[in-house]
Amino acid sequence: MLLVIDIGNTSTVFAFYENETLVKSLRTKTGDYDEKTIKNIPYSIEAAAASSVVPEVNSQISEIIYSVFGCQVKFIDGLKDCGLSICTDYPERVGADIICGAAAAFSKYNSAVIVFDLGT
Image (tube, rainbow, N blue to C red; front, side, top):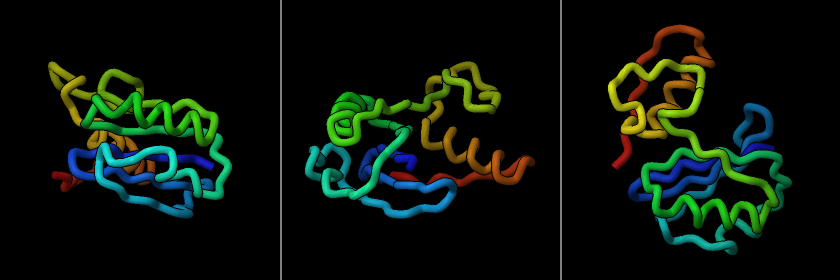
């Protein structure tokens, strides 16, 4: 099972996927979580990936996921290879949530798409 985490300014969403099927999601206020937030999730996690626009909570999330599930979290950003060309002078300034949405849309449709991200 894959754990996907979207760390936004206002809320953090934990989504559990079996192949391409969303099995469960949990939304919490960003920064307002600890091990008990996800400890009762009855799934075995094989991998975890996160997009974060709040870097100051990344280490906290990493520690919690490792403690509960025993796996490292891979953080996505504009400097990692995600299958897209980020055509800007400062790719590190592009929100990881936007990159993940664009990569997923391109992967699904294999064509140019327009992606709207309506975060905070």
